[in-house]
Image (tube, rainbow, N blue to C red):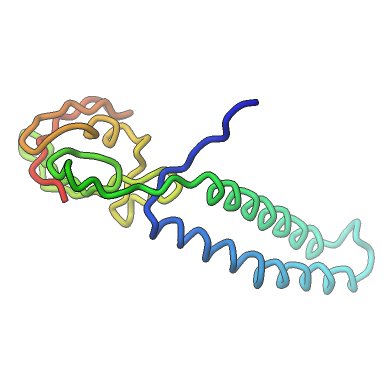
Length: 158
């Protein structure tokens, strides 16, 4: 039997997923069921767009619940490595400058389950993270991106 995919994440990321799951199960599910009940009262279901919309939302909610349960069940919490403070690893923030004259950028490398580029959290599966993991401050790294190659210099790790 194939081993299920593991989802590396911070403790904070796992707690966010647990909160979303709780909300979907206790609140959102009931709201959708109520919408379906109201839509049914409108009569003929074959031409009832409210009913179709509510059923679509129900399918989405149930799918998201299943996904979250799987991610939480297979979560691998990222532990802080006290012995390795100067190397880029999962769970650390890395600051780099795109060469020759780019601005400083800082991202935290997290598991794909909690990645959010708008919050400065990039997936360990992203081209940038893959190129930076295992590197140290001062190193120049060539990153293969969909838009082409870029060279960055690591200036800090937290």
